[in-house]
Image (cartoon, rainbow, N blue to C red):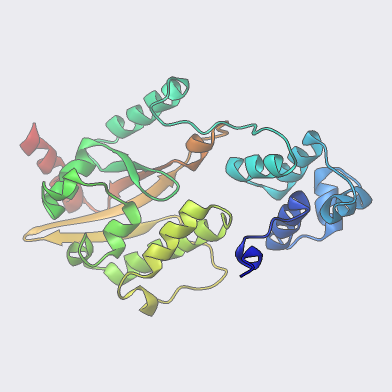
Length: 274
């Protein structure tokens, strides 16, 4: 039996395929991309068709014109036979010590209000005391011993959903954001895998997500457990001009009280622990 047909085929022109794919996703013509990158249309056409190789500098110019993430820029350079330009280190690496200090300061200064740090797959990497305190109150101490995923916490039926009074609104907003981020990184297999897992959660298919509509910057979450009611408005912060893949993909999720009662409740929770 000939098994060659079952093997994945490698493109003879990986750089051209990547550039053409990204250009089509950005709805750019060759002329438009060439103009933005500062190269000739003929040169771009030759690179896309494999008639001409692109230099490292040209690939970086094209990556900038396409607005590619650092992860995708590395992939484009590797496809062209060049070494990666941007590192991808663990957040605990000594090289990221300054960024880590800045993130820790953000988390501490946001007390007594919740704040978390997530990676590109929405896994919770860090949480300030207020966030840990609130999640422990809602989910219990035992649940806090296992890894947390920001999206799954709100979208899964056995996590925060029973405590979210406006769950359909929150779930729709989060799912829209998750899809937007997944569509922006189609080559990121790890992210795509997490996205597929989210879409298989119960009740999500019934939510209406508008096509081609960017998610809003803010979303109010109404939490309730027993007599405690807390309204939160979340905002997402990213690190400016990072030169590391890990740092570019980090998100600092900061939650502010939606009203005076919620603010007083969060302050009271912090005082109980003091």
